[in-house]
Structures are given as C-alpha cells and as structure tokens.
Length: 205
Ligand SMILES: [Zn+2]
Ligand SMILES: [Zn+2]
Image 1 (cartoon, rainbow, N blue to C red):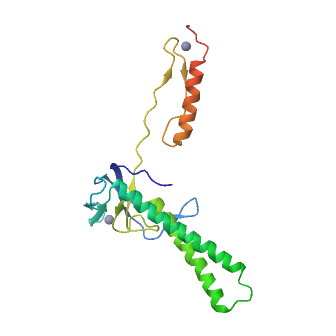
Image 2 (image 1 turned 90 degrees about the horizontal axis):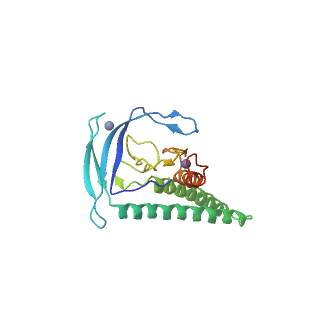
C-alpha cells in the first residue's frame, strides 16, 4: 500500500542488526532493526530537495539523505508505477509470444523466455519500489530487499472521534476506535453508532 506523504512527518531511521534474515510468519524473511526518530521536513513543491544528514546511533555512520517535496515524491512514485506497468506489458507480451511459438527456432524461444523473466522482475521490483517510495533517497532507501539502513515513515495516529453520549440520559453508543482499524471501517461504524444514538429509546425524554 502506498504510504502517506506529508510535508512534515515522523520517520524512523533504522540500522539492521543481523546480516541474515530470520524467517517470519508470512514466509518472508524479516530483519531486526534498531530505530531512532527523525522528523522529515520536505521542501515546498518546485524547490530542490533538502540534503539532510542523520548520524546512526548504532554504528555512528553519517547517513546523508535527499528529502524531496510532496509533489516530487508523487511523481517519483508515478514513474516507478509506469515501470511496473511496462514490466507487466513485457510479461504479457512474452506470454502471447509463447502461444505463437509453434516450432520456432531456439533463438526466438530463448528470447521469449528472457522477455518473460525480464518483465516479471521489472514489474515486481518497480511495483514494490512504487509502494515503498518515501521521497527520501540515499543509501538504497525505498528499494526492495534488506539494506543496512532504512527509513520508515510513521503513520500519524487517526484523529479522535467525539464520543457519542446522550446529553439527556447519559446513554452511550460504542464504536470501534484505534489505528489498527481501516479508516473506512471506523467511519462506517461511527455513522451507524450516530444513527443508533439518534434513534435510542431515551430514558429521560
Ligand atoms: Zn548504522
Ligand atoms: Zn437519551
């Protein structure tokens, strides 16, 4: 999922502790990182990126990053998405090529297989990179795979919704709240709770 990009937002700069990934639940390897807080401030749209240096608290290395504006970040993400679609197009083209191979010569078969893998890799890498695009570049930030240092944007906590309590009888309607819920889910249940409150049998009419 694409991340939220704000002009000013919290981030965590992390240093990978172990060289080899340890297997995690979903089959992908996970790496242990230690993190330090970093506030990302972006230039206004149209301005050149800010050059920022963060000193890693773990290894003492000075990490220099370029921080891009919100607009530039969106364009970077868009270009990577285009790369992903180009990879998909090559992949689909090669599949069509397989169907028409017939008893074509070895060269064409090898070319079709190569196009298939090229398309798959390009689509996969660019797709992941588009989702990972943070508008912070340097030290391989935003490219898939384990890197020694990584920058992670921290999602701001969702805004608190006002409680639903009847002013006359104190009747309260509960609704799910918390950042582990999807925003749409919370809003849907909040609207339902509002209408339940409006229609409740008031103990003190
Ligand atoms: Zn470090
Ligand atoms: Zn009431």
